[in-house]
Structures are given as C-alpha cells and as structure tokens.
Amino acid sequence: MTATQIAANGDLGEFRSEFQSWLEATRGDLEPFRVVPRDAAAQVDQARALQRMLFDSGWGRQGWPEHAGGFGGSPLRRGVVVEELTKFGCPPPFAASLVEVLGPAVLEFGSAELVAEYYPRLLDGTDVWCQGFSEPEAGSDLGALRTRAVDDGDEWRITGQKIWTSYAGSAERCLLLARTGAVDEGFKGISAFFIDMGSAGIEVRPLKAMTGDDEFAELFLDDVRVPKNRIIGPIGAGATVTMNVLANERSVLAWQRQAWLHTRLADVVGEMDPVGELGDHTIGHAYAAVHALRLKVRETFRTVAAGGVPGPLTSIDKILLSTAEKAVFDAAMELNPELLLLGDSASAKRWQYDHTYARASSIYGGTAEIQRNILAERILGMPREK
Ligand SMILES: Cc1cc2nc3c(=O)[nH]c(=O)nc-3n(C[C@H](O)[C@H](O)[C@H](O)COP(=O)(O)OP(=O)(O)OC[C@H]3O[C@@H](n4cnc5c(N)ncnc54)[C@H](O)[C@@H]3O)c2cc1C
Image 1: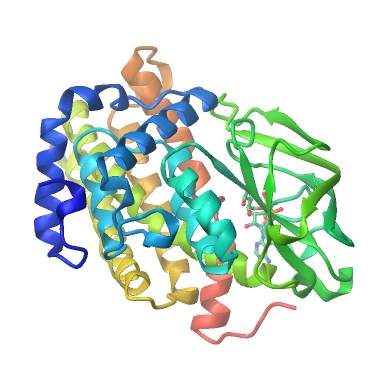
Image 2 (image 1 turned 120 degrees about the horizontal axis):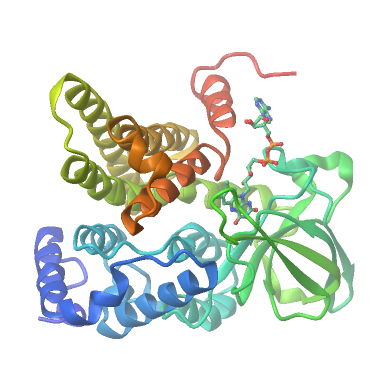
C-alpha cells in the first residue's frame, strides 16, 4: 500500500505500520539523512531533499489539507511521520521544522490564492520559509518592534531590521512582522507579511551562534516593496498570527524534539555506560523529563488536530521541552565529562554540539521566564507585572 491509498480517516496504528514498512523498504535511499550536517546551508539542502522525498512518496502530504497540496487526513499523521523517521535514525533537520511552525499560521490566515501558490512549494521542499519576528530591541516583547510597513497604494513598503532569523541565508520566503499602526498601539499596531527574500532592498548578514554555526542572520530591510495581497490576516492581526506560530513552536515542534530526545537518551545509555547510583539517578531523571514532555505534548497535539486551540497551556509544553532537553544532555555531561569537555572524535563533537544547543531551548519560541509569566498570569490568575 502507498501513502496515497491509505484512507483519509484510516486508523492511525495502521498508518504507522504502513509508514514503518516504507521506511524499511527505502532504507538505502534514507541513508544520507542519518547525519544532520552542521553547516546551516547544508542543513537546509538536506531538509529540502527530505521534504521532496516525503512529498513524492506521498507521506509528506498526509495530514495537510488538499487545497494546500496535501492528501487530507488527521494532522496526527504528520506527528507519526516525524516520530517514525526519527526512531528510524533520520531526524528531520531543524530547518525542516519551520514547516510545522510557520505553515499552519499561513494556512489559517493567508489568502486562498497565496496558500494554493506557495504551500505545495513549502511541502515539497522547493521553498524554505524563515521567521522574521525578533528585532534588536524587541524579542520577548514583540509589541515593541520598530520595523515599519507603510501603505503605498498597490504595495506595502517595509523598512527596518530583524535579528536571529534562522536559516534566512537559504530561505525563499519570510513570515515577517512589521508595524502598520502607531507605536503606542503596541501589538495591536502590528501586521504579518509574507515576503520574498529575493526582493530588492533585503540584505542578509550571517551571525555566528555559540555552537560556532551560522544558523542565524540579521535582516536589513530598506524600503522593500511588498504586494498588497501578501498581508497575512487583516491589518493589525499580527498578534493573532504570532500566537498561532508560537503555539506551534511550543507544541508541534516540541513533539518533534521529544521524538529526537528519546533517541538521544538511548544513545546516552548506550554510549556512556551509566552504571551505579550516579547513572541510575541521572538517567532516571532525564527519562522522567522526556516522558513527561511526551505525554503533555501528545495531549496538545491531539487538541490541535481536533481543531482546538491549546492557548497559554502550551507554555507548559515549552517549559517541559527545555527541561527535558537540558536533562538529557546534562546527563551526558555528568556521565562522561571527559568526552564532552575534551573529546575531539566525531561522536564527542556531536555531544558537545547538542549539549550547547540545548541551552537554546529555553530561549527560542519565548524564553523560560516569559513562559512562567504566561502561566502565572493567564493560567493561575496571578497579578500582571507592571
Ligand atoms: C536557536 C534560536 C533560534 C531562533 N530563531 C529565531 C527566528 O527564526 N526568528 C526570530 O524572529 N527569532 C528567533 N530567535 C530569537 C528568539 O525568539 C529570542 O531570542 C527570544 O524571543 C528572546 O528575545 P531576546 O533574545 O531579545 O531576549 P530579551 O527579550 O531581551 O530577554 C533577555 C532576558 O530577559 C528576560 N526577560 C525579558 N522580559 C522579561 C519579562 N517580562 N519578565 C521576566 N524576564 C524577562 C528573558 O527571559 C531573558 O532571560 C531564535 C532564538 C534562538 C535561541
């Protein structure tokens, strides 16, 4: 049976086992995806190739609506695909996760024409999208952003600066936030735009991360002309679009990460020889953290798949994600500090990279402090900060 033949509302277990069979049958072709390259451009190339392969075989179209180039069916199928791929040893590169983070927001708020034209290109790896939200003076507080979009008849003209834009150097499109209203309107004066990275007036300057990689870039926008129909949602709906994106980053992305963390925790057990009390305690703590993450994100994913909005509760997922990610790689560090601090084998370098990158999980998608503020104010009803 192929991905196209599986009934749109068929059983998820059957879907999983069909996909597992495809993975086995395609083992040789999947070999290049076993190791995610360090170089950002190479990661994007790998993400495109994987998207293309999944799209052509039909598995990457499962769980996405037909008007967007998909085959329909429950969005949970996307979760099964990513989890089984990861268990098979081919975790999708981080660059690929932007499909899940940005895609659903454009699907929900973008015009039908825009979705029909650009979504299939996203799903098949032709286009990579980046996220132009953060600015030098506006990260946690996106309501303070200064990039401005001015209405100029048939077009918008956008001028400003973005920072920490992952994979901007390789992306074809950007979901970008810009101010269309007055500064004192805060987030109410912000709108979302879908812009072409090849537009005149956009300069991309790479930034080195603490891992030594060039995943990030700064974007400088100088009077960039954007067609009127490239606004995502109504004017001033930037906050709503942003909440959708952040909820995905804190939930569906967390599902991808938990699948990968399970495999890396198994690597800790396999490679670090965790015998004795220290091993038991460290591994037990990390396992509990990863499993708690899995259970919570599973619930969130099911809410999203049923058309619900998980809202501020996704802050719990995000806290569990950063807790679990740090627990797994701190376990590796505790059990084999020599390897992580001094090793220079390929395996040591991978552990060092993952241990460093784990620090990012309490920053991207909203910092751990911001998640705790959201929980305190919006779930527990504690007084808002002044
Ligand atoms: C790996 C990675 C990938 C990223 N990719 C992208 C991307 O593709 N696109 C994009 O737009 N951005 C991206 N970012 C940026 C990320 O969204 C921001 O770094 C994040 O929102 C925090 O903003 P900031 O860096 O400006 O820190 P700030 O907002 O300046 O925060 C600095 C510190 O102050 C704390 N703080 C701030 N406000 C409060 C408050 N009200 N209460 C308590 N503590 C507070 C924060 O928790 C933090 O510890 C990425 C970041 C990382 C690490």
